[in-house]
Length: 267
Image (cartoon, rainbow, N blue to C red; front, side, top):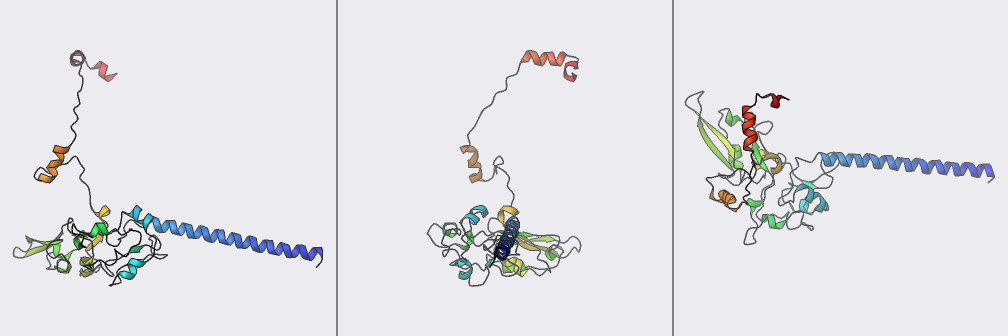
């Protein structure tokens, strides 16, 4: 091989390596941007029972999929590209397959990193307690719920595993007809676990009752509001640190201000 042929061969190899490098960089950039967009779109995701707060969960979950394998109803899924969720993390969609609230909650103890924390779903005796699952909370859209139209429907109420507790039926007179009653479903947010069985059972085309993450669905009154009729809540007043403030008022300045012709206030 002469010098010219050797030069041309080396040049071809260089161009080939450069093209491969550029391709890998572009592919990596696209993958990273896709990953970022998946992460940003995850504020409405529903996690398995006993999941840590979202930021802590994402930092702790190793995406092993053991919780998904342990679920006997195939409720849990691992997020894949295009789901607009953090890739490889477990989640569920109640309208597809809700959580059937297994008594032994098999998806939790199998977690190797405590991203699903057993302590959050165990009672004082160390036994699993389905009432403590708190995956989300159900919300009723009164505009599309046919029970609020006056049509008798209690599908969500009947589907609830905590019958008569998490969802209550409130009876109200139908003033429009004068002889019928509204059977309105009302969610008790303190008891609702967010299992989604109500959402699955809803008879409307798009569910009028649906589950949202608790931090999204629930408001917060603030520590400065006290329920005076609740002894437990009122105890916060007794335990509060009382700080007294004193405002120093110059009486002479106040009198001068009252006796002035307001010119000094307008300057």
